[in-house]
Image (cartoon, rainbow, N blue to C red):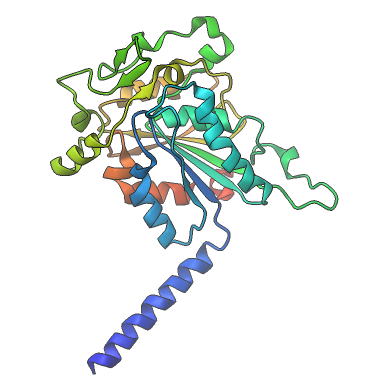
Length: 290
């Protein structure tokens, strides 16, 4: 009796897996880019959940500017080749960024084909169709503004606009996240995690490069070239909702806006909700407007 029940449970689980696989037969590649100070390990929960719903190509990216003094182009160059490889293989791509990582993915897609670009669907005779960028998902995005890209002379130095937790070592070019004793990383980034888990991830933080964080962006993807989803964390202490709204409300900005009851690193505190959003916005049909 117990053996028969076990067989039934196993068969049911197998059928459920087949149904999931059939529901998502051609999932895009998901490229995941962390924010300043962070390693790509912060995506491990989301990566595991996406793999369980038949996402095969899951690429967390380590930013060179975390732990090394380099410029922003090094970060862009860490994202762009992998993106191009998927596109050239005929595979669609979704890019997911967190905080400063949103700035990086935004610049990395410049010139790539998107679903809002009707010309990108044209086929070259005898060639395989190239994949396209389905969407960019900004999780608590710390991003350049349209104004500073169009008028670089107006861009403010990061010293004057960064959160108080940013601590600058001008001699080494390093920026750390321990500049505010009242808002340590446990509260700034991980305020919804259990204390021990918040302490663990705090211990994994590294410095970021001032040159990368302070660089002037040259491209804005969210003015109509691509579908860009901005995810606001309702309990984000680093990019609070009011600050996030200033990005969303820019003249010319074209965001799809989602709100999560999340902190600054929702991949760790709300992995199921983040996974659901990635699945939702990894289908071109999600952006069809009537």
